[in-house]
Amino acid sequence: MTVDLLLGLQWGDEGKGKIVDVLTSKYDIIARFQGGPNAGHTLEFDGIKHVLRTIPSGIFHKNNINIIGNGVVIDPVVFKSEIDGLAKFNLDLKSKLIISRKAHLILPTHRLLDAASETAKGKAKIGSTLKGISPTYMDKTGRNGIRVGDIELADFKDKYRALANKHEEMIAFYDVAIQYNLPELEKEFFEAIEDLRKLDFIDSEEYLAKAQKEGKSILCEGAQGSLLDVDFGTYPFVTSSNTTAAGACTGLGIAPNKIKEVFGIFKAYTTRVGSGPFPTEDFGDDGDVMAKVGNEFGSVTGRKRRCGWLDLVALKYAIQINGVTQLMMMKGDVLSGFETLKVCTGYNYKGEVIHHLPFNIEEENVTPIYTEFKGWAQDLTGLTTFESLPKELKDYIEFIEKEVEVPIKIISVGPDRKQTIMK
Image (tube, rainbow, N blue to C red; front, side, top):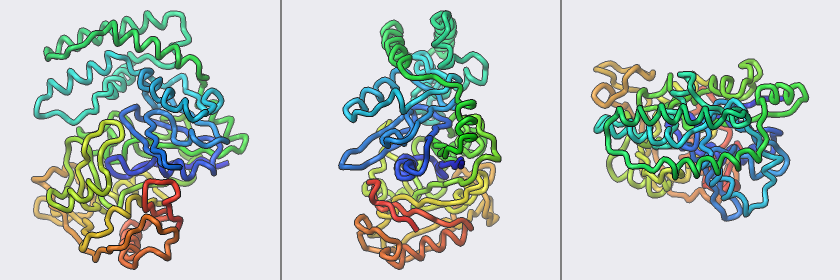
């Protein structure tokens, strides 16, 4: 029996979906523990690119179970479209995909509330994906939410109506121009609910406890990234859930002492979507090249990602709060062709040199301190062994390992599952 955990160490988009897909054959159960359809996990194999939003990234493998845990928020409409998109692959979703009764539902009015709230902020907007995530988690913590298990109850529609009416009052309070046709949105919502009913709902904490006793292996899959954690991220420019290791315990009902390995995923550079501080952001040609070569556009939103150099101050912080035991470096191939690479090893924070992430990393407070490395020109995408990597990349990897004191076990050199080097 083993319970391992996989999560992102930056501002999301690190490539978690690919690594879950690569590792899935070693596990009996893949369990998603937080986030919602604002997270897009991209997998690529056999010449086909797949984008999953809510469904765990192990779904394409035959011999495992995929669980959507209680910490996840589910939009039935988006979920239905995701299921429909998988239909052509002849997956037995009925037997492979199960959902926690304690997972909360995103209502149409949650999405409308999200739009109204973000519009009302004006220039101070945080860059929400407008998927209704934040209002859903607010209802969860405010003890007003509707959960998957409520679908099975006779008064489900009454509960829905009461909460939707409350939301409409809140939307009116914002006094912003939000155009919508709620009856049309509700028709789509309740049709999707009927599709959701076709899958099995479980008491996931009990299911996972039993699986552990039976000696089954479990991989907990996170969404977004550690620097977007609602407690430990760059607040308020964060998501609404706990994206760190602790979130796996509360999002699945697994005890902390059961977790063995914590796999941390990071890019060889850094990206960020939406608003918020980003000390190593590159506003020149280098940042543009990273975005173009790395295809840095959101898999769900299509938004262009801001790009910059690897920030070891932030990475060490994420490793520390998650207890990371192994690292996976993604998109090393994107850095091929740069004459010089930069790595941030410290901050000049209000005139003082520091090596930890302070309370506020806004531009006026923080200036990154860089160490430079010689780049490499070699195309990495066809390489299959660590020994075949250029010396400059090996030096880059060795420096990172020494600084963060955690080994890098996987180096990704392309989007396909086969373009993965085990070290």
